[in-house]
Image (cartoon, rainbow, N blue to C red; front, side):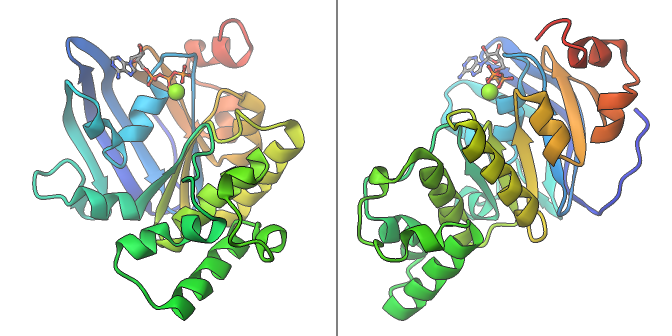
Length: 257
Ligand SMILES: Nc1ncnc2c1ncn2[C@@H]1O[C@H](COP(=O)(O)OP(=O)(O)OP(=O)(O)O)[C@@H](O)[C@H]1O
Ligand SMILES: [Mg+2]
């Protein structure tokens, strides 16, 4: 595959295979994830987008019978090395899920959850970081007067931004988003897309999306997957205007999906 990069590589995926028991869900996948850019993974349902995303912070470790071969490197860290500390890795590479998943706690307790786990107790420090993180997720104005309210009472889009704030509080380097807008209405979706563009100034982002318009609006680079393979990876504009592969062209022109 021929492509040019625009930024340093933050995560390099090389020759990655993943098996769920006997079933091979990822087949020899290669992809660079560039620093402070947005990379999108697209492709039909079941092609392995979520599986690949979960490889980037070893979320697949939680699924029984998973076997991974190949390499995923985060800067100099070999993510799949036996010595890699997975909780530490997941702090550096955080994840936002399809459905917002705030804990059944107050807004404040959600945002500072990871900090408390890390042993930070100082109330002033926690409040400062909570404010910064909520501002970073564009949620501060909406919640600053009700920090002790249950997070689950917030509207869905605010819950999703709260999940972003909860990540920002532990200062990740990479943010993984698996169809973060699929539970949201179009206006809330637009807001999250704008937020992603803002977050990209400070974070490396990888997003899975079913929505090709979304991929073309927000991402810098796009990988098109089919049946576990990375069919084509390139600048988003190229994927959507001049794909090199016939399979990519068929998909983006809506022949199947
Ligand atoms: N825990 C699991 N155990 C066994 N097979 C799985 C598991 N999770 C996913 N698979 C299979 O692996 C393949 C890739 O699934 P994955 O969820 O990564 O696809 P996807 O591209 O994210 O699909 P969607 O767009 O529907 O979310 C599918 O064939 C799926 O059935
Ligand atoms: Mg998926």
